Length: 600
Image (cartoon, rainbow, N blue to C red; front, side, top):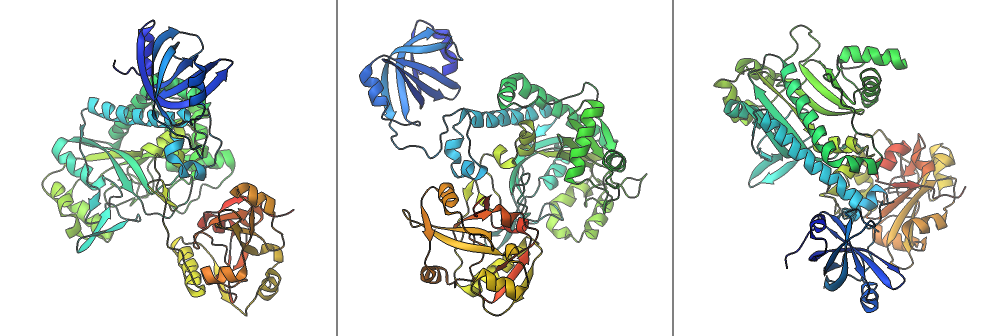
């Protein structure tokens, strides 16, 4: 007998069927057990009336792989309208260990770090799984829409011998005897492909080594790009991009409207008329009129707050969740035309969606000599881009294109708070491919001090470093620095009574530790580690311990009194040196778990 997927059972009412899936949950009601299995299409209920079978299944845990053969019967008790009765049960892969996260519940009440720590299990949750089913449909709809508009798909290189864009940070990798770079964008190659296909598109991973630790940035993302030739205006590119967006939204809503309802998020407001369009200069004037915030900016650009305000405006004035913002600053990059009518503007556009820029594009410079001149002004080396310039030296029509991020679109569709929730296995400052980075533990006073300074410098974080006489206590340190006790950050190293694992808790200098709160957060009873053990293991004397548990290879909890303080001072690895910086920056750079960990 062939296996039947849950979605196909309704066609087999009254017949025998074989189902296979993962044990999702088990309910016992009197003498009857209701086993729910999960397969690729959803859930199927198996009704068990054998007491011994129920007893054996009760010993197992979610994740157990099971085969059931029984009769398909109609019922109103399940979403698919049928269930399996009088089954024969076979356990294919028994699981008896309790999962660290209860992924078989309707919703997961865990923070983002816990969610990512147990990503392979969390993704089994039906609600989390739905995000990535929708994401898969976005990819399909993007490709289908562009094919229907005459575009040809191609694959772009990931390893490049020179950075693909100027001005953005880039990951260097070893390549035999030399260096290579992970692609920041398919820009160079999609422009080349205009000379081949005229209209080309690609879906590709790209990498940005920008040291952001925000809810909207990740280091590896999926970029969806299109490029087209023989255009007279960049408005033609925007028309193609807008049709593509409309096709994506229509496709996703048609198949997954129920998913958005379950998430409690509104479907995107897509106007019948073309998306509203506004110049950056005009947008800044609107913002000033609506909020009083000055329209003056260092550059002709919008900041995140501006983007959110303009999205509100677009929804209120035009009934649209989408807004085109056009003509940003001149000299945007080496390949974009400046506006011949406005010297301080360029021929470019962004598409705002629910307060977030999710698509951008430009009218590219297609004339070889002008492109080369701009290229040299950017300080780039021509010989590194030989293939790129070949495409223009031997004939390129007026052309342009657009690009947007899969994860950002998914994030805003579901109104998620963090882009990592819309990324299967995110890479950021803390993780690679979803897993925590394995960091070398820093040992020794001098090494710790230098590592802290290097980390702060690499993130361009403002701080002041000072050397002074040796101090052992928070009171001594505050008196010597001339700072208040409450502005000091006291770093305490604790040890688990059961596991022996170390954790650091950072509290204000004038507070005492709330040990019960720490125990509850970590999940085991903790006690203060001995000074001699700290010295032996980390090479740091008491009084010099810095609030950088992440560099010492341990979990770090930080009290809100530290994280929210505008100015924090602490000893930086030695009893004889201190650092002064903002608490917000400290919490961010240390990947701290912020909460209430001090007595009040």
